[in-house]
Amino acid sequence: MGVSAEINYPSALERFDNFQEDAQLAFLSQELSGWLYHYAYNVGAAVLIAASSVVALNTGVLPRWLAWSGLVVAIILLLHFLIPLGSLLALLWFVMVAVLMLAGGVGSTDGSRRRTVQR
Image 1 (cartoon, rainbow, N blue to C red):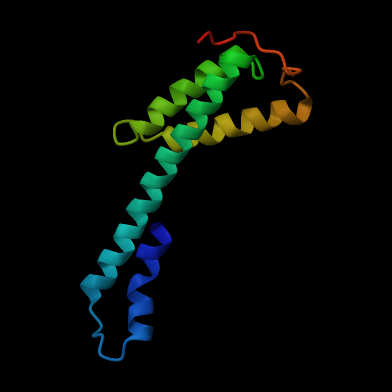
Image 2: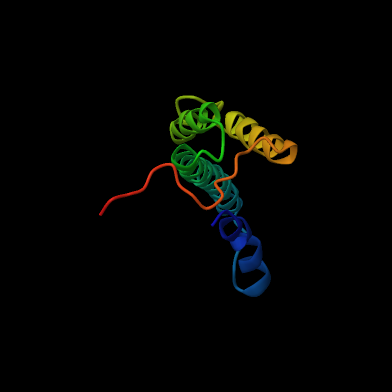
């Protein structure tokens, strides 16, 4: 969405001969794309981190402290207008998961589950 908002003004100038240049419209296009990039990243990263943390808590693939910290980071990301450090915390969480994966510190589920959902 951010890309489409960013390129709509220049592409309209290029495509349509009768389209008049307008500095306010160009500014609006750039500001809208910035906000869309910002919100799409925060919401998307929050969903990814929260889902990964819930799966990690249920399966034991990641250490419990990392899974619980992931849930905290996801909440902070959703509250990015109050706590501006959410993006930095998300990056730190991603790096910690990557380091654990590369170092072999993540557990293997071997196909078995710690908890089975009863229906």
